[in-house]
Image 1 (spheres, rainbow, N blue to C red):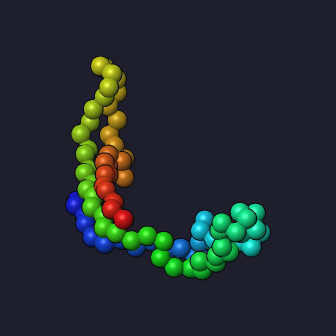
Image 2: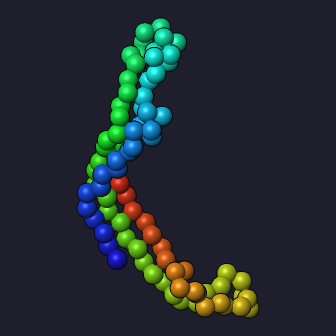
Image 3: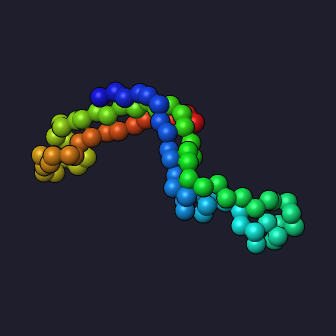
Length: 85
């Protein structure tokens, strides 16, 4: 399965405040180098994403003579992708 398309990550207020906000105390501690900032909720990042998923159900073993169990449902998937932005 191949997939491609746009992607948008939206963060809630608490998340954005934690990772992107600057409190008044932090602003004072930086001697004014950083202004107090409350980002609120909103888009954290956006971009494009491409990826592929390959389902392999061959029986294989890395050890000669070892038992070769049959994969259970949901096993045997290889997923890879790339994101820009």
